[in-house]
Structures are given as C-alpha cells and as structure tokens.
Image (cartoon, rainbow, N blue to C red; front, side, top):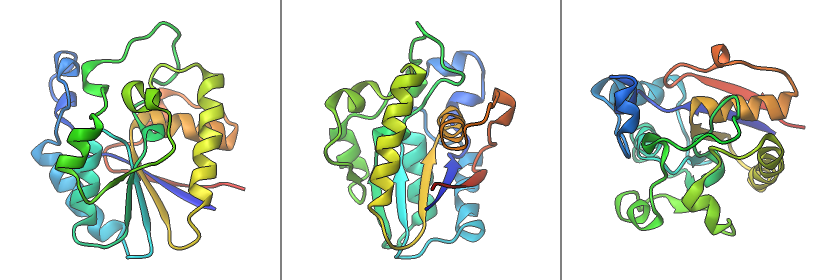
Amino acid sequence: MELIFIRHGQGEHTVNLPDSLQRANPSLTINGISQAERLKSSLPLTAKDVLIVSPTLRTLQTASIWSGNIACRKIVHPLLAPRIFPARMGAATLPCDELLDLERLQNEFGNFTAAANVAHSLWSKGINTLSEDEFSSLAEQFIGFCRNFKRGRIYLVTHDGTITSYRKTILGQAFTREDFLGETEWIQLVVE
C-alpha cells in the first residue's frame, strides 16, 4: 500500500514566531492558499482517490482548496492531528495545534466525513503529546484503517511533526527536525 503524506500550506501561526504560535485555529495565509491551489496541478486528484485530513483549520483548508469539486472520498481523522517531533514528555499542546471540534468541522467542512469508531479523547486531545509507544500503537491502527481503501491513491494532509513521526514508525529510521517537509511538500511511503 502507498500512502502519500502532504504537509499543509503556510498557516498564520508561522508568520510571526514565536508569538503566532499562540493563535488558536490559524487559517492559511494568502501564500498558503496559493500553495494549496498549486497542488491541483502537481498532485491531481481523481474520484477514485481517498483524502484523509487532520482536524485543524489549515489542513482542512488546504485539502478543500486542493480537492475542489473532485468527488473523491474525504475523511477527517484525529490520528493525523499535529504531533510534537521529537516527542517530549511533559510537553503541552500550543493553541495553534488545538483540534477543531466536531460541530465546527461539520458546519464548515460538510463535504468531509469524520472517521468513525475513534476514541473521543483523540478528537479532543489529539496525538500531540503521546509517548512514542502510545503513538506507535495508534499509528498501526491508522495504517490498518488505510488498508480498508482498495481503490485509488491515499493522500494524507497533515503536519510536519506528524509526517516525520509516521516516517519514523513506518520506515524504522531515525529522523530529526531537519527532515521536516516544507509547506505543501509531499512524500510517498510504501507500507507492507
């Protein structure tokens, strides 16, 4: 199975560091919107594809702009939520990495379906501060979820730390923050 991880477009939380990290639910910047538009030509979607997205405003905006009117399957899943990398015990989730609540998600992104059979705590707290062992176990569950899709490509719109955490888990290699993808960059991983 092939999973294509895409980092979201530039968000408002990255333009005036470190103060901007305190902004709750940051949107895409004008540059981030342009980056998401360019995904249409660099990674064109089809109706057979599956688009799985983190429950944050900037990832959902990226996925919405990119997918446009393509009738692909569109799912929001908390196992793609922001994740601190490398994991740090005792770390706290910053306001910019808080998840959208399910009501707002449904009201603003009604063409996306919330993943079913997911623990309520994941929808409220996400995966940001989980230990490596907790994340690895949930990553295996998420990969199992992805195996349910037999047609098309599987695209995952998420965050730099989350992508790097999945890369580490799937490939069994060491990574650092220098390995983070840039905005709307993507990487394809083959999962056995």
